[in-house]
Image (cartoon, rainbow, N blue to C red):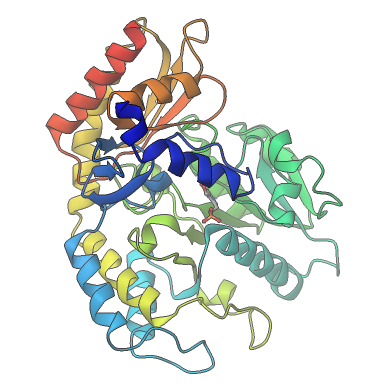
Length: 404
Ligand SMILES: Cc1ncc(COP(=O)(O)O)c(C=O)c1O
């Protein structure tokens, strides 16, 4: 009877009926949110432990970001890049400064930032490095996740992401992640770039062995190859530093950014690099109607300012230690592995107990939202505004779920 009065079941049914099934969402229907909390159409509250795959690093509806969006909506929303608008220069300058790079190229989604990085690296290879026409190759890692375009899935090693989407874009060499010798051996005179996630998020928050990223940096420098760090999920405070590369003092030639850059409000992505790299692009060679639009820039400027305070990186580092302690306490009690960097965690559940999907369904029933990735692995990525008490609540809820 009470079931009949709930709005969730019919909303779930309609969503399934009228959309392509390219996702398998948890059966929750959210209607509002604030900070780290979501409320569904029936008034049930959930603690958000996914944060839009890190697109909501500053929480839902952060007041400073919402105020910037409202103010911009009332003045100017879109010009296209045919004209310059008054938010553009500030966004590019402040983001370039945050990245320690000369230039920024704004796009919208993460996949577009990756595509931009690939195009820039190839052009740099032909025009600066002197690679023969059509011969450029890029070294990537097994288990990568860089997005969903036809070129990007061409070098995915996930069959679900790749199968039946060919013919595939050539020019990529896949090596095992974390193996510096294999990466070094794959580089030849026509290699223009190494493209890596400094931590593989989609793969389950896989942290490479210490020394790997500095090793990649060194070999790229030695062999005149661009190091492109895809920090779309790992960057902008998620791991306790501005960039995941910062943990080992590594500075890539190109940062690919997205997700949190849009403040959880609007898609904003960007490539940041020095002028000798991004300067290879000339008018007409790349672009996007919406990339760098006034609304996006107005929000992203405030994102960069929030990050420039260092507060979110600090919170992520400190609260991440609490999350680590809590999760490590569950190893042997349902978890068989835990990897934590800042407020980002990959948990391997004992596959004999339940799948990651089942665990997430049970967590959701108890008011905590997270998302499985592969098999029995779950990724946790709460908003960086989460409190100690909320972390303790999520860990206790997970303990209950694992205890059955
Ligand atoms: C590391 C990484 N790169 C690229 C992307 C693609 O971003 P988008 O979904 O905005 O295209 C993602 C998305 O999950 C990602 O995690």
